[in-house]
Amino acid sequence: MSPAAEFQWTIRVYYEDTDTGGIVFYANYLKFFERARTEWLRAAGIGQQALAALHRKMFVVMHTAVDYHAPARLDDELKLTVAVERLGRASVQFFQQAWRLTDGQPQLLCTGRIRVGCVDTETLRPGAIPTEVLAKIQTKPA
Amino acid sequence: MSPAAEFQWTIRVYYEDTDTGGIVFYANYLKFFERARTEWLRAAGIGQQALAALHRKMFVVMHTAVDYHAPARLDDELKLTVAVERLGRASVQFFQQAWRLTDGQPQLLCTGRIRVGCVDTETLRPGAIPTEVLAKIQTKPA
Amino acid sequence: MSPAAEFQWTIRVYYEDTDTGGIVFYANYLKFFERARTEWLRAAGIGQQALAALHRKMFVVMHTAVDYHAPARLDDELKLTVAVERLGRASVQFFQQAWRLTDGQPQLLCTGRIRVGCVDTETLRPGAIPTEVLAKIQTKPA
Amino acid sequence: MSPAAEFQWTIRVYYEDTDTGGIVFYANYLKFFERARTEWLRAAGIGQQALAALHRKMFVVMHTAVDYHAPARLDDELKLTVAVERLGRASVQFFQQAWRLTDGQPQLLCTGRIRVGCVDTETLRPGAIPTEVLAKIQTKPA
Image 1 (cartoon, each protein chain N blue to C red):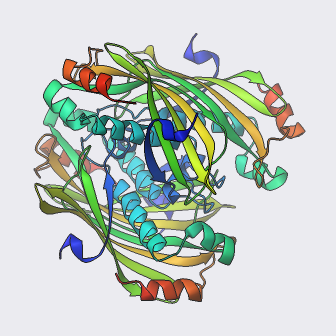
Image 2: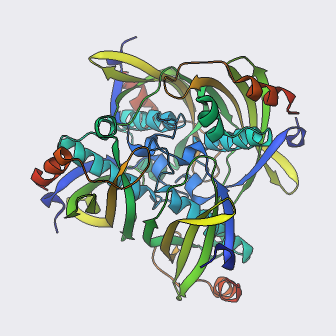
Image 3: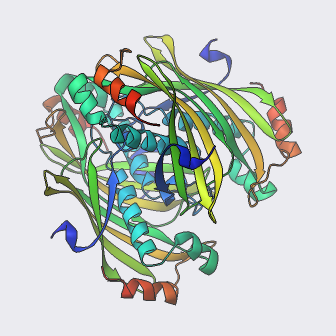
């Protein structure tokens, strides 16, 4: 699979992302993946602040499974991919990757499966994804 | 000034707190200081979740000034101090320190002045600290 | 499974751990789990700073799988458990849980499987867990 | 002072940046400011990974003073500015701001003075900024 095939978001590794092992702290890939999902949503016309304000709904993460293949370091530029693996009425499962382009050669650093559920902002009870949001996700080429 | 003179809270340095420089990432001392303030409040009988629920008030940080004297590293045990420097009707200024006890000798790592203001949880507008909360702060030996 | 059956570590939820959804940010459970593993290692007589200094080895996270069952909130006290599921020559797989004790009743918030590998601190290449470290892990009642 | 007058770096506010107060967690402005300083250095041709590898030097933060004027929220786009206030042989003091452009009108959210010192990567002892790095900083229009 090529990193060019899907929605991509580029980030840089800063001091805040690293740990004393000299590499990116593993939990931070969940942040990187979320930044990419957020921008993917934004590209589909979905803002999460608006989702909460208009529909009283928000997405919460229900499950994550992440494999760490190679470490990233300070100043590295990473490409993050977003692909929808499964779209339900109340949840979305994403498959995501983090790549580094070193001398033009992509190296796969990390892959993740992230399942998010739609919940009420107050009760946190699961609920259907609002129709217009679902439509935007379905029609988005990913 | 001795670290024994005031309210103290002890924390450990974990991987999450460090950066690729091999030391604690400087911004994290703000987190450490807040953990100590939170426990100081709790020791005074003030819970912030309850403060929001009962009084619709919360404390927000308005100003921080921090000096970094010496670095902390993975596995270090730090003592954090809390002292009230100035208590207003709508704000509290704290003076805080982070120490490491190395071979029984305290070494000062970091000092901070943190000013927090009391605000409405919805509007975020400044407001007086609730009387019963103020009383608890005033009578707390610090 | 009861939270009392294994090594436990208690933490508090601070502002730093939460997000605008009003709950603990999901990625932070990886930090909580690591704090518990670190204290479990420390209780077994293994310091990670010393591991790096003496053996030029460190543990890096290779895989995480986390399920989020119920949210935690500001001021909550969480119990974290640590159990070794599989101990290899170069890796350890942990099963971990996060519980909240509400009115004396434990509620399961989050479960995780975390696999860490032993690597050289410079090359990051996998290597055997040092014998004396392995012995301490094996004899630890968990 | 206009946000257009200096080096600027744009970031987005994600869930990871917010807290249960519904706003950006104050300590995170230090991260935002550092991202902007890092990109300012990069624009001047200075990479921090290379600085460590070639010169065995790194910049560490010695002092921060931050004022919080107005809160940022999820999905906000922030403009961060970087200006050198004082350039010494072994330290640099920056003045930085965080702005939000709301309906085309810039609103000042946060200002900070950050002093960084140049230190040896191993001993962490202060040392002169390497001449070629100093030259790049001096000639950079900021």
